[in-house]
Length: 322
Image (cartoon, rainbow, N blue to C red; front, side, top):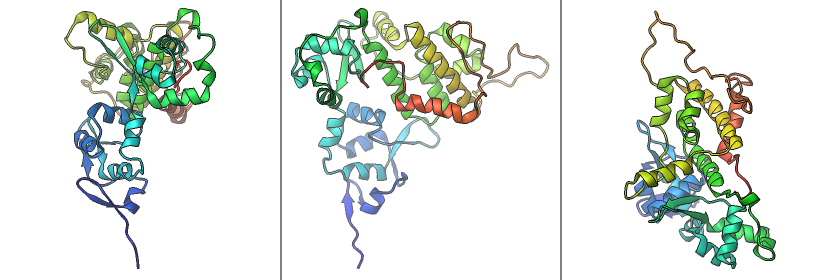
């Protein structure tokens, strides 16, 4: 006699054997429907996807991603559902984070500025100041791993440097990289950290550059719409130190190589009678002496995949934290 164990979701009954299968399958749910099934608010659901807690699959014929019924059943089958999933994406600000760690808000801010832990999100308040949010789970892990940071002499930032923006940029790109299989979208995510001058140098083809700009990921909306507030957001997104800029330039060169291998950027056909001044998709020579941009073909696809793998796993030019 064969016993079949079933796991019930709100709208379907799925066998435990199906839940444990590795490959995603079954009906594909829109993100709103998946969030309801998983009993998550929209912001919680989005963060769970960005952190890799919820697996998504491409939506055929569109840029949106969906969640399979099998993935929903897998998550609902967890013994701590839904509280466990919610706890993994719970974010806290400075006051709540300091309370969680049992330290003063001033000490918490110093630890964050020194790069001991990284923000996972941020937003602008009514005064156009950046408010940083942190994963509660990671703060608890820090307290268990390095309890000495919570007492004794106050940590001093590195020559007054604030590592929060840089760590947030790096983490944001890593999360975006996990969400897409489209190499042009990945290149656009990396390109979002560079200003127009750097982008024009790395991507001389105007059609490729326009395609990358169209795919540029949204940071967060500014309400109300304000040029001043948007300027704060733009400054937050862009890399601002030479070594960080160089790191993203190198990553963009590699991301573009994979994107061009995957498919060409949309653009008009080149007139056979007029030779362009550069080959379509060719990487320019580095003008900055500190930047050594590798050949797009040197080392082959394997090397490029490894470098992009670093990006997706969180390899980044940040400091400390995660």
